[in-house]
Amino acid sequence: MIISHRYRFIFFAVPRTGTHSIRQALRPHLGANDWEQQALNGRQSIPVPGIAALGHGHAGYRLLASHLPENILDSYFKFAFVRHPFDRFVSACFFLHRGNDEFRERAAAYMKHLIRREPFRRRVLIVPQHLLLCDTRGQPALNFIGRYETLQESFEEICRHIGIPAAQLPRENRTRHRGCEDYLDDELRNWAGDYYRKDFELFGYDPQTLPVTV
Image 1 (cartoon, rainbow, N blue to C red):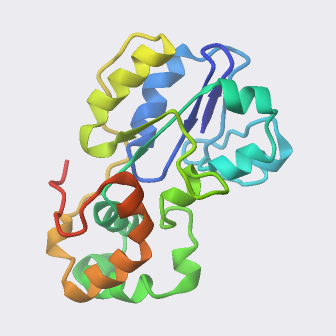
Image 2 (image 1 turned 90 degrees about the horizontal axis):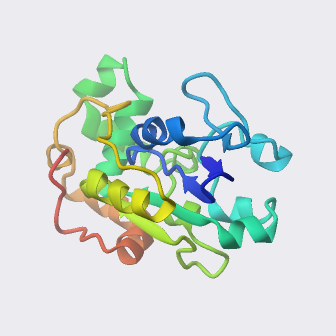
């Protein structure tokens, strides 16, 4: 998460949607009084105790709404990126099990087991995207939601909104795996499709159409 008082924006970092690439591109424009919270590359915390206590950089809208002044939350330009739920789920599983050769050899079987375990489903890298981006009515509460599948184009549009020059995004923190179609048989597709049903509905993704890996 980044909150820039200089450019009056809030970036909600949805896990596995290119967030580290976006952070890298935004950091050169941050002022001394701007805030970033992240934990992957040396922990940084936002100076708001209720948000800092989260311990990672993926704070959701409802959490911010309970801790930030209304004038900031309402007037700042709020944006995030989303990703096809199946593709994001596969990416998150490989990220969480990086270095685990057994997982890599039996990835589909592992993912079928994991998607049915409630403690795993509650992990911030796994939770549905709408839980991070919606208000108490269950509706998206941001000004702009870009797509991972068109990351560069969406980022350039955001830059126009917040008033910074657009830059070519670096490719950061990528996982190595085949396309999600190689892991999603009917059983896993049904489990994951049910869990991410509202993401498909709210963000316009088709569960019958698998994404092209980028």
